[in-house]
Image 1 (cartoon, helix red, strand yellow):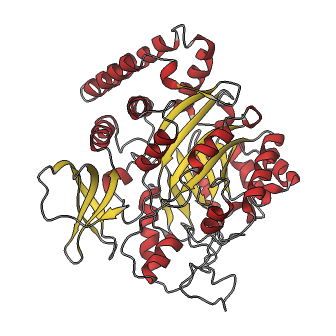
Image 2 (spheres, helix red, strand yellow):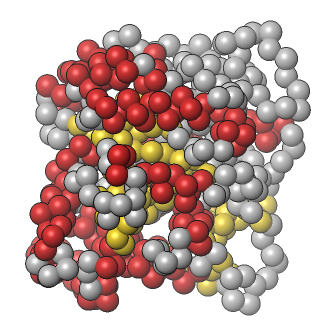
Length: 488
């Protein structure tokens, strides 16, 4: 369950942090607190007009409390933004019932990219994410990728993969300069995929796209939308698939929790639902992985790794959201994996991360030097020697920009992520969002999290149905309407 009514009292209620949230109903900013209570961690909000509400953050309150405190101890909202999303078009060649963008709904024109030229000319080594709704429908896509690459930036394509089933088109994406592709891939369950995407037969099409990406040599991220009661087992299956030796072009797998945005929120409101039990937070996808692969993954290892991850990003002054957590594994070359814990002294790294947080407040430069020295010593241990160069390269990519085609083929990075919606929006988390956004309707917004909730408020002001532009006479009813976008 993603949300739950707030009890009148809770004897074990502990406040971790005061913040501002958003009322799920009126979409106004309201007072909020991150708390632990009733055996879980929650974002608890109080709207003067609509009362109290809760968003589940984690069923492991001790884990979440430590992550929250550590994250805010080492992060600063003043770090420059290095990653920018381009909402290129509101058109899509799918009609996904869960579309974050409510594509094919409004007459919003394609994004005027003159602002992009200003952006890429004024910044050094940023990542530009070509996405929303389906960027491969833009006829000028390849020209703009070349402009981005000519200025020395990283270019990432986010796609539902339908056009990538054409190998010649896939080759064009490689030739124009894309460094990586984020492919929407929700697993191997045809019925679950149909429910999420509104179309049958997509699994084989996505597998063809993956084969084409491998053959043309494009580094790939698989982004798996996970929904309670629908496709949880696909977490294990997609990871196992990604570890197959022939799939070593898959350098990263993101488990993206279903959120109440766009078309999904629109339909739930029509059906009179106050919250949706299918929605998933990052910590829940993490727990699903630990449950499905208990021999390879455990919470304590992931806890330590994420402290290292947040400390490393802090050392290089890189913005990153608390709602994006990670873990790292290596391929064993036989379709299995070697967990990060088998390569390093995890307790020692935990102490190094804690020391960094203590020193960061008073002497950030010294904290950074000592922390990076600790990582260097770990890289020189006998267990790390076979992959020492890969480990060092990965650290350098944190500093210069995470470019998947420069990540070693031995590495598989795992992400447990979410989009911010009115239920989980935390203003202090949102201001540290690791992605800015440029769109036709919103202009330039420094935080993608803020852009999401602002877009929901705009959607609430219109009665347009998802899919309106594709079929103005479309019948609507209790069945979930179709909408489409790349939700990666």
